[in-house]
Image 1: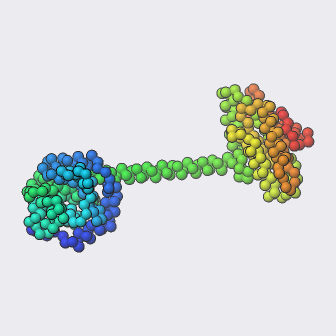
Image 2 (image 1 turned 45 degrees about the horizontal axis):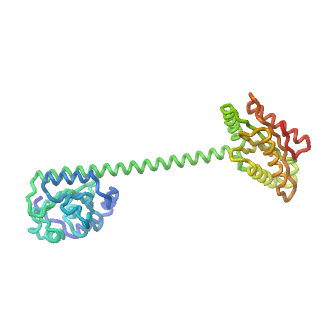
Image 3 (image 1 turned 180 degrees about the horizontal axis):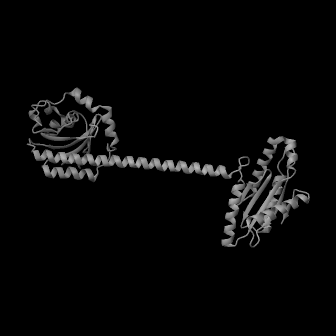
Length: 362
């Protein structure tokens, strides 16, 4: 670049270019500001230093009010207290405005550039920088080389820096693409989680009795099939309780349908309180309940049924006494779901015929 034919931009143009919101947003999107050194970038600056012979080569990202050196080859780069951040005017700022390479052989001979802070503070004499331009034409930063002595930059030197600038841009684009892919993947994971949560809620709604919060008949049938399969594999006992609210029509006539619903909800609470976590308590009809008791024999099932009967009887019930009748059946060899259900239901009918508020074994 012949500086005599192309006057450098003034301070106002530089400040406007550096503060451009779209350019700053593009720099932020790289995700590289204040990130630690990385071998993929350091390899580029090391090779550029060897090929050009420049003692200092760096990749600079132009943030608002500072330059951040993502990669830096320098004799003092690893010394304690050395910084990858530059404040104030730098040669790279001129590149941000012109968006073309800037080549300076001796900054002390040029009135504009001799006042760049690094010339006096660090003794920089020669500079060559290539812009890192996005596809939209925004300057992310520069790929630069400097020397502490006057230097004639050859055409090959500029070609080397230009090629490495393109390599740095490809690395930046790759990082941004990976970040975008990660963000998309995270969104997909979150969407899948939301779908799973919705499916779980839908499954819960489909298998839960809305009034009592117990399992409904659909869930009861499904659990019974699962428990029968377990019995076939393990040979463990299985029992079933069928429960019905005594004189429920009288309860509804006395308390109204809302009062009847409250009674059913209270009974559901008593049954759940008497059950184990492995037991399945379900509402299978208007005032009918069923309890699947895995790994429970006849004596154990009768004990659970009696405990539930007493819990309901003892209430407390403020408006009128409420009781339940219970039928108990324990699975027999070769028996399927329909047969054990029928025997438990027959036992429940027998309990009602015998005077209600009692447990009857099948």
